[in-house]
Length: 262
Image (cartoon, rainbow, N blue to C red; front, side, top):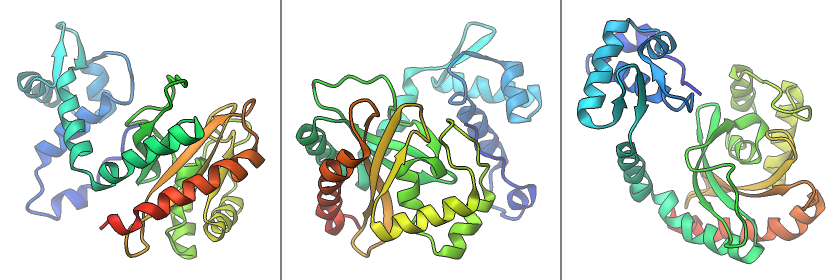
């Protein structure tokens, strides 16, 4: 999913703003929107930039080793993982939570994930899976809308009621499944209730046949900085079992790291 372009006034209002770098990053991010190789025309159209500009950007990225081409189609190279590795190794939340996720997954014998809020979306930045469980689903860097995910609702609870209402008003609410709640008033009430309960449980709203439960992760001062979750297919785990079995483990895990997050 491509991030929206910055307003032109925002670009021109800061003399330190480097427009060419901003355009390069815009093109760079487009590769994550489609798993298929992309042509110059595809990228120029998606970025809303002139072909000549995109051609120079791609040439620069290719010279730097981040992009490769067969003369027509462009793809990312494994070198981009250096950027991801830099984030993961330097991010305090990941460093603190990864061992906790590993223990959670081992204890519950289910997959556990860590996500942060990025605009109107959540992005998964750490994950743990017990040895017996294999999943080709959500991986690192995977994005989902915040309004229909348990991790998203857990983190949206950090806003005041008025700020939350404003945030929901700015979101494009689409039905990801037949069960997705897209009514803004109902979502507002649901997230406010989840905030009071201290957890969020989402049942088949983000992905068909999948339910998950999440709790917010707070730093030392109580500010919500992330969320951790556990999920499973509806045929294996009921909502009641999630609350009875997973919720205590998640709460204990989140409480155990609060003093370590600055």
